[in-house]
Length: 279
Image (cartoon, rainbow, N blue to C red; front, side):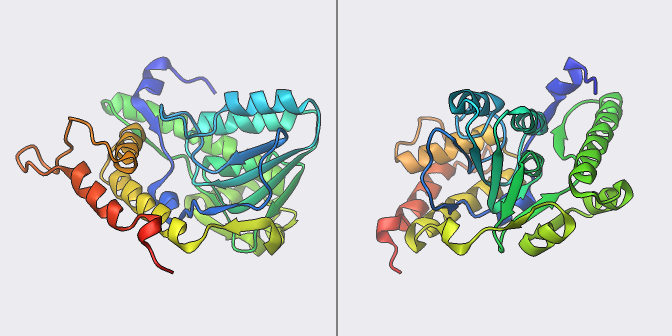
């Protein structure tokens, strides 16, 4: 699947806004992480903020696990296709058993990662989401034509992966991807995306105050994503908001509006911090 450096420079891989909107970051595994646990509770890929799961992190954990069985807990809206595919390969080639637990969602690139498990369990309220390759690109019409050709190859690659994992024929998988399919826990088992359901005792949903605070942050992230702000800039802004130390640079709604967006959002978040929220 060759891809020119020119085209790669014009592409930006992001978790789709629809997945970000439905993602609940407060859904976690009950058991704490150890040296044989890979927790994917954010996006797939490195965006400069240190939050995303990358092949380098996975490779490091697998080396330390040294052949022991590994648990991979997933609640992710997806992200970088290349990193998702690389993580899938690392897990597939690992000499030990790989158990995947889909706690919330395994969407987009995260669904590719999830299918690397020797055993795949999903919460009854969890979701797989599969769709055609999604990215943001810039360039002229020739660049766009090359990007479209490349994305078609990625779609074919994902179709083959999903079909091999589930036993569903490729034409049906392609139609499911075309329609952006959300597959719930029971459907995932029936269709071959997972093997069994997780027990309720294996899934933790954060307490209401913290969950509401995280939900507020997520809504801000989704709104900024829909407005076209790159993920690195969104993460920098949210980090600034939650730290309570705004930078000297102001983000404005328009160049002439003179509105301090970060200051306004910080004031909003201050009113909904967990310690201020009552159950």
